[in-house]
Length: 385
Image 1 (tube, rainbow, N blue to C red):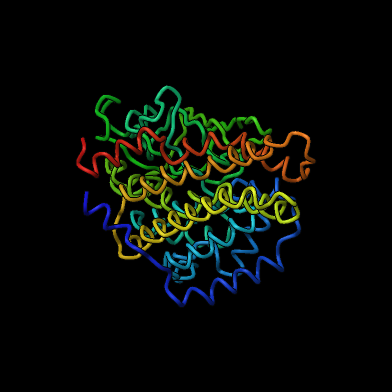
Image 2: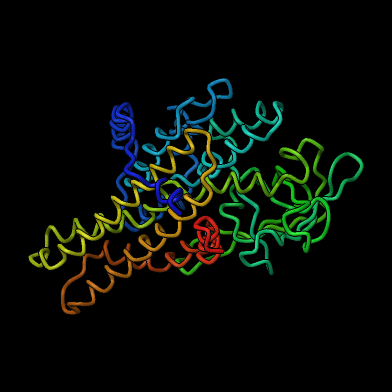
């Protein structure tokens, strides 16, 4: 337990990131068109390939990837700053998001040199967008029970099965899928492998899923005898579980696990500045600020571990679990504050933003691992199970 707690001692970003932050702020000020809060609140679910290409032109897609593959060779602290500013501005980043955050680093670490040379420059140029194939129907949050199967055949592998809740699959070029390459579902983590699937291949069908907010960020993806070449396998056959856990450390620990509702909070504060009743909410805003500062420090501490080459699975799970509670509390508290005075006029932009965030906030505790799964990981890390 002491080891886990010591991981979250006061952490700060290196001083040299300050100039980079100023550069990012200036870019966003000149490159982003004015957008209402309910559109900016979509941020890391907002798909805009043209904006991703603008970022790529600055070298800000795949920023942590080596320059020899088209990256900027920056460290995870710089990426933290970039992501923080993008989310605070409500920039539409989801086109390149997963490739930048997970797929690129995964291929760099586990892929062959041929895979690195083929995929990484495309990622850095915002010419290849990736999605993640983990969740499956009937498997719930039990990732180890996946049934989608890759079977060896002449010329490579034959893929059959389906994935669900796959973000932006309908827009992406590739999926990195966790599938079973040997054994049976009851074998759990044994026999799992990761494959890069070209979503344009025959036998791949993508069906978007429309959510309560009217958006279609998620999809169900079907594989019907999809032929994958031998070089579609990432890393060693059967090593998929270890690889996907390393990947999830990137997914669970970043600013996106703290800032999902930040545009709504910022716009509410802006509206309160024009209200004569602003002081009535001072304590609430103070609590939000305190929680945000603490979570941000925790996220920076996990980033420091990533910079040191560690794989902080339990620490990242803790940040994600607590961060999700913070993100989900923001729309609930703001809705309650609005309801305190039903006769007051509500800023239309605020009303639309809080309505949108309230509708999507339940998904925050699903993506990147459900609360129950994360708390099981945390309990093991604390030696409680």
